[in-house]
Image (cartoon, rainbow, N blue to C red; front, side, top):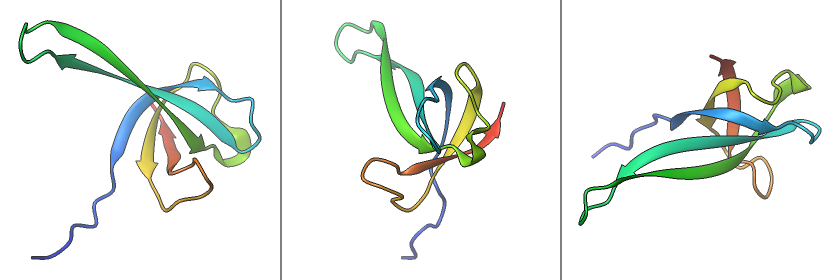
Length: 81
């Protein structure tokens, strides 16, 4: 078996860009409860690398998994959608 080198790609919205070189991106996903079959929203926030501080609050962005850049940063913004 060979290991796959594909990196995880996620779409989200920039919530905060107050840090220098970093941003907070919120990813919203909809899940369905297995028992009662009701939809509910699940939010997750990631601290990501914001190169040259070019992405700001409200931007829809694509983030890609990278090596650990700091204690909390594991993703980098690649493009604005």
